[in-house]
Length: 86
Image (tube, rainbow, N blue to C red; front, side, top):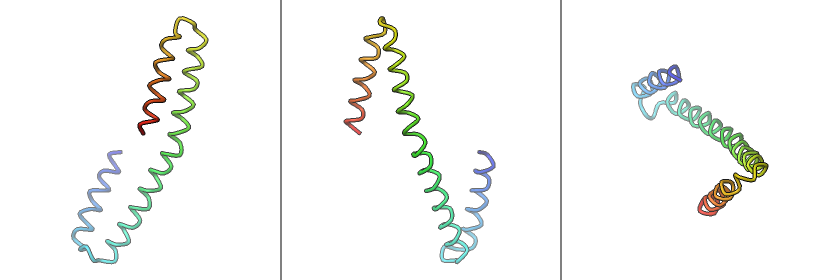
């Protein structure tokens, strides 16, 4: 992660010295935006099923223990209400 920060700072200074209208700056910014969008889209693609399955497995495990009945009900109500707000 530190390597990415250092590379970003170096590229930022380099683009600043080249100027905003430089072809190299425009191409570099286009590539950076493309890579950033691809990265966040891939994270979203993985994150949503991961969170959903972990919640389902957690609720299923809580259902097996009858003394945890109230806990999974509150968690389910919280999950449904936050989904409705979102």
